[in-house]
Image (cartoon, rainbow, N blue to C red; front, side):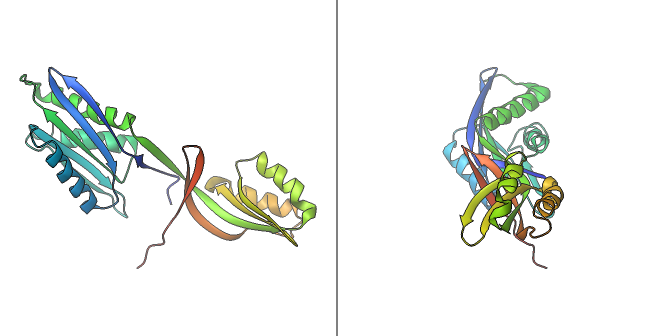
Length: 223
């Protein structure tokens, strides 16, 4: 799986004005083509009196779906430049609509490209974005003799102890960055003299969101 999956956690809006034309970007998270098309339709309904409602979206998949629309602007001056911003930012499962209220002055090809891209960037600034990192969620069962050394190792590394349960043995639920997995496994075996390792290993994505760590399971693909 990829090391980082960047997406929108909370959508937002942004606006730029160029020669009295208003460019209003509305950004949202989507997970399917149908959701994206519904969002575009809702923006067109909301801004029914605007000259243009140009759009772009990226839907993640085995092969990502990329789509853009100039909605009456000269070909290649709106939708494609908007899509290029999303691609450059590495954001997926996202849809953006840029609404233009014409100000009476033609901007030319280059001016339109710059304005539509600037609007998308402004919209993204007002979103809450997620950078989901690849990780390993695992369980560790150990006796009390090794708990102190294990806790010290975890606190000095990038391993998060999500939960601990103290009974006959100590059960820890861990979140480990994917790139740290081998090192952590080897260190756990070393500290416990081979008595324990990582169990119930599951690949996940995780990200800090508004002061807490959120975890997403990765669904296996069916043939």
